Length: 156
Image (cartoon, rainbow, N blue to C red; front, side, top):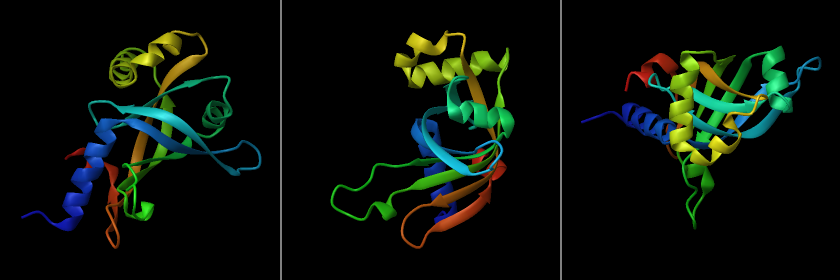
């Protein structure tokens, strides 16, 4: 039988693999104030999140100035219950802009999950970025919160 922590880690890994929309927290240049925005995600073969963002956006300029960031994804909120009980995972680390050949794997994973992004993926101001996560904070329900190394989560 698996432990509650391992069950939570496995659920978090499934949530990351499913991709979807998440909250990206970055630091604004100069002031260092946090800023949160919404991004679409997919993961590469190492469970590392990939995003497709425009150089024209504030969050991209923030990552260019300081690549430290956090990314949170959550499961569907219960329709008639407490949203705080929904599974969620927050990854912390540094984003890196991808170049070939890593960009090719990222593009395939991202566009498989988000085919509508094909429309703008080829625009010159858009690029794929990947989170080199170090830590994961998993909330797998009430009273089930776990801090784990990303490398351990990615191993599942």
